[in-house]
Image (cartoon, rainbow, N blue to C red; front, top):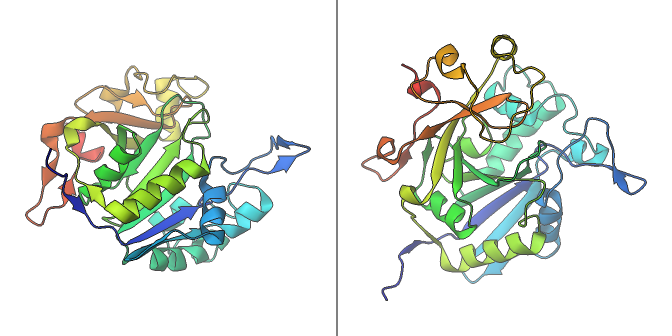
Amino acid sequence: MSKIECTPVDNIMVWGGVHGKKRMVRGRFSRRPRGEGGPGVPLVRSLQKDQIRAEHGVVEAGIANPGAVKRGVRYVHTNFQRCIVEPEKYRDTYEGQLVKPVLQRSKDRDLLVDMHQLMAASELDFIYMGSRAYPYVLGFASRAHIRTIVVVEGALHAQFLHGVGVDLSRKSERDDVGYWRSLLSTTLQEGLPSSPVEEFTIYTQGDLTANQRDELGVTNHSFSALEEVQGARDLLGVNRPVYAMHPQAMEVVAKVEPHEINTTEDGILRLPTFRSLSR
């Protein structure tokens, strides 16, 4: 059997706490507005205490929003991701002032991993990519055995061709620091393969405005993950069915067909955005 060709990965940056961390109150998570659970923050702290190294590289890690993590909330002033999309608008907020140093530490890497956990109930784990990415990012998804990819712009991972977001369900068997330490160690030692897009189910994501949610009658409705939202296709002007990403249907997705994914001359994947699926 021939050996699979892998892209070397010598420098990995892992972020946790972009959306804070849940706070424990008397042994239970607080019901007040809070951050995420999952392995993100514990993984970063583990990597900072016991760094993964190889002869040719290293895994570095950082808490993206230390103020929110310390307080046990999702954010101090505003959602960190919004600050990435509109840095000038939010430059005077706590999170806005974090954007520049986080982006600075994220560039010039071979791989960026941004760890999250879905706040809404879901049975699925997701890998997020930007609309332009290096093919070996799919290799990371394959190595993690996560076959559902969502194309999302305006997030930390999407600022870089080498970026990937991980969003785990609250019931995920991958909610384990040891699992991700092992995966990161293997990636550092062996590199990443460029997996075929046909191995994955790929969606592109859009957001519903408050008015659109009202018009669709989903304001107080709970959808199952990836349940079709009736009427959304016509309202949003897209040429295919639209599915709820989360039970509250604030975010919706449409499936991407493999033939719609192109590779540029310099070997970069180009994936459709939600807007590009409009009629």
